[in-house]
Image (cartoon, rainbow, N blue to C red; front, side):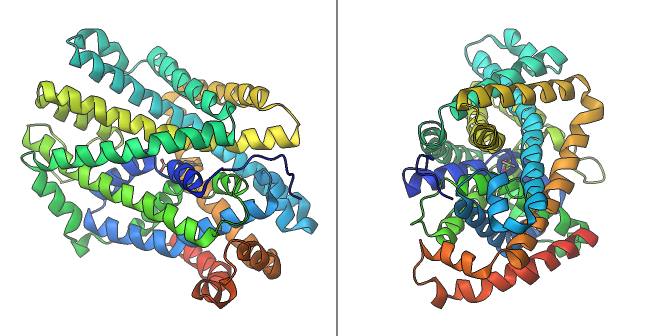
Length: 444
Ligand code: PFF
């Protein structure tokens, strides 16, 4: 099955940066803190950590293993796991590819706004605030221009391939992201009001625990680890055979969860710093105002109230968000691009142009029918499609794929696997517990 000319990640570090780059994105820096702030803070954090450990991590191992076994795009990798069930397996790969493209079509719009906010903070810094206003004021042309700019950047990186594009840029950008992140978090801690946010984030109030919270936490965990969209299957297919998959998956999950945790440490205190500075963030009933636009309204208002240094902090913050979004968007685009280059034998450049063009067209349609489509596409992809595809993947790995093949595949990078705790638990876990947990969460 393996074709020797297929590209691979050139180092384990490179793979970890790329996979963690895919996982770490707006979901961590924007989604997780906003969800935590609207769902009881510390209680959400606890349920989220449980979901990552109990569901997302075993799923991540499953997706990476299928991909590495298949050594091909997701359509072909799923087919390899169950050669007799060609049609349903190919359908699963195709649906995954479509969902990845749809996620990119809304992700690109949000990332475009971040580029606008970044440029505006930069202009403010050099005293040209007025000229930057267009960039942050909602309008269809502004949304279109910024989305296209972001998509072109994403296409540029993916066109350069796995090692020269994805790996190179992920290993450059991810460390920068970590450093900027820590600096900004420490800075926010020094501001008045930060302590109140920390308290909300770290001291649980169990009266806030509701069944709906588990559903939100599960969705957030899947989105955050880029599961149920074939991204990890595709990245797994570029993984050398001597890589220890469970260990690598654990490291990726740890980095992703660590970044989400630190994002919470930054954003929740930042909200209270903003409140301290007179920005309204909670309604009278205690609900979070504008939760969807938190980073675009509350944070810039906070940066504004901090004077000149605020503009500087704003530039760093939005740069951080763009980097995080970029390493995720390239992973989404890679899913359809790998399918098209391998299945239709198109060159990478052509595939990137065609698929990128289609996604830009879908994105533009969303921009022009924003009220109708934006929320609906997010709902369709992240609330329904991702968990359902993830469920089908656990069923494939747990019930359909031959156990000896799975063992042989994992053993290549982990020779002592058979005697490990991991192998005693994981196959049963993926077979029984993961589907039951997912269905339980769905139907509560
Ligand atoms: N994991 C990314 C984030 O947390 O922002 C989002 C994401 C990337 C979702 C890739 C889906 C995907 F295929």
